[in-house]
Length: 121
Image (cartoon, rainbow, N blue to C red; front, side):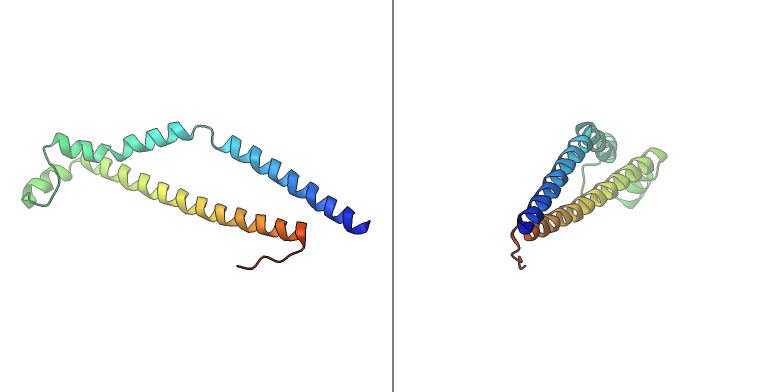
């Protein structure tokens, strides 16, 4: 009976942990659509500025023309906004990858506790 009590306790802990994760992720994803929309518009600011200034990409423009267009305050701000948004996005992707790895590892640990069978990599 002691074995069944331990298994029952582990099962309760596992289920309560899953409920906690469900609540946490349901609450965390609120507003993600608006955040992605804001980031998308910030990423397109510098490209839109270059299009307004009649630059269509490539490196076939003289240095003086590029220097005059890309060193204005507006261009520097838009380029900075694009850089910052890319850095934030990469940081979030890295953190989500680490979180995913940790959750998978925790799932394997709980599976081991439940079955008593060690899972090899």
